[in-house]
Each structure stands twice: as structure tokens, then as C-alpha cells.
Image (cartoon, rainbow, N blue to C red; front, side, top):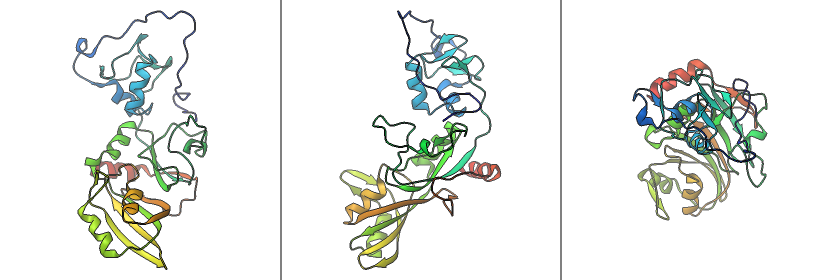
Amino acid sequence: MTDKESGKLYKATPTRGAKQEPARAKPPEAHNREGQRIAKLLARAGVASRREIERMISEERIALNGVTVDHPSLLLKNLTGITVDGQAVSEPSPAKLFRFHKPNGYLTAERDPAGRKTIYDVIPDDMERVMPIGRLDLNTEGLLLMTTDGEFKREMELPKTGVERTYRARTFGDITQNQLEELYRGITVEGMHYGPIEANLERRTGRNQWIEMTLTEGKNREVRRVLEHLGLKVSRLIRTRYGPFVLGDLAKGEIEAVRQHDLVAFRKKLI
């Protein structure tokens, strides 16, 4: 997809011919200690996540005033003179947030080496660059928040922030409400400890039932692993809420902007 403001998605450009040792930006010790790390500033500007930016720096794709940057911890007051793949980076604009209804069968990734479809095959090509907040498994559907701000993404994903996520799971097997309420004490599955989970048994038909679960950690495949540990088979998993933002009646594959007023109000509470 294309970022209207920066003009492109940043991709590595192979170097042809003999490679000459480039000039390099001085390490952070040589700069004024005021400012923020370049990786944080670029993430805030929506270029990529911090981890991706560190990789881009190692690939010599980022420069300051024409000098290659090789320190992710380089301190800067602003992004003046910073380029990515030779293109100037604009100062960050206010964060934007979108609700996206991720369909089943799509990876939460920008690209897949195996050629499988990703969420960016669904999101409109003419949208500005957006990043997913958290992930949904290939076969998990529902609410996926997307943002233009890498720092906001990081804040939302940190377990210590305690942002609630709610899921609905269609399962097969035998389970009681008392068993589900025990999850509020936390549970350890194959050496992995999961914190308190609020779980409620919804409608049941025979041995099939829907279960609603609310948690704050969001560890990899947490809902599926916990339910499978209880002897249930999960046939469908839908995320319906992330923080105060809900899936509602958003159709599969649709993406819709969150009102700026609602985003600002939430961020104040998050801090």
C-alpha cells in the first residue's frame, strides 16, 4: 500500500557495484543528550515499528543530513534532515486510529514469504500507511485496530497498560460456568502463565457453545490455548472489543476511522 504523505512504502534497495564504506552518523554519546531516540521519533511519525526501524538502520537505509545512521539510540530533537531510502521524512501529524474488521484467513502482516494473503490485501491501496495494534491469528477474525502512530501502537500493546480485549469463541466440548470462573485466578498452560481472564458461558446447543472472554495480556494464541487446555475445540474466534473500541456492525473487510475526539479522550485516560 501507499503512504500519501511520504510517497511510498519503504523497501530495501539493493546496492549495485562495489560497496564503499559510507560516512556514518556519530554515536549518541557525541550528540547533545537532549531529544528522543531516532527509532522512537520515526515510529511516532508512522514510518514503521521500532523493531522494523532498527532493522532498516542495520540495512543502512536511514540517513541524517546524507550521513548513514547506524545507531537506533541516536538522540534527535526532531526529524529535520532524516531520510529513509533517500526520501525525507515529515514530522509526525496527530495520531489516527481506525477500526478494521479482519476477515478469517488473512495474516496480520505486511507481507508473507509464503505468498499468503495479508490484511494489506484487503485495506484500500490509497490509504495512508497504517500499522496493526496487536495481532490476530490467521484464522481469527474481528476487530483489529490500525494506527498511523508507532508509539501509540506500542502503548496499546504493552501488558502493563492493561487495555482489555474481548473475544467470542464458538467451541465444542463440555464446560461449566464454574470452570470458566476459575480462569479469573489465572492459569498456567504448558509452562506459560496467563493472568486473570473473565469468561462467561453464552448460549449452548448440545455440546456446542459460545464463550465470551475478556483479558488484558493478549499473549500469543492465549484464548485458543486456554480453551484447548480446558478440553474444548475452538471452531471460530472473533475479537469484538479492544479498549473502548468495539467491532459493532462493521462489515468484514471494512475499515473506518475513529473520531479524533474519541481517540484523544481515550489517550488521556491511557496515560
